[in-house]
Image (cartoon, rainbow, N blue to C red; front, side):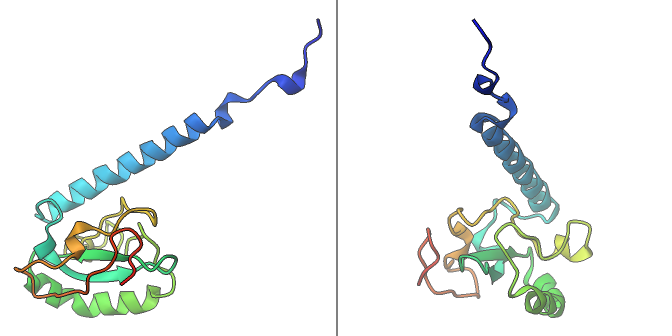
Length: 144
């Protein structure tokens, strides 16, 4: 019986391997988010620490920007405004406004472990202890 070379499959391209790689990358981002959150002294991505949000250009989803103190946020607001204007047409879910080695990344904190498929963060929704009041939007698609 002859060997049919077209019947052989390269196992590295199987979907299970691709899924494992995506899970590994997501796990690394979740670990990064946890360490950044701790370094910024935030507790579980608290809603009352949401100071602003940025909108994804692909799906229009709002992603939170956290800051431990309002004073820290006010001091960094000018740089944040400049950055938001420069990325307004190119920000996508999971992008960072400031890289982790930038000094403002410890003041203006974002979750990187988000994709366009992720739900809107719970922190986005109004908290009675927060000055920033936002319109309610759909948790799945971000529509008002």
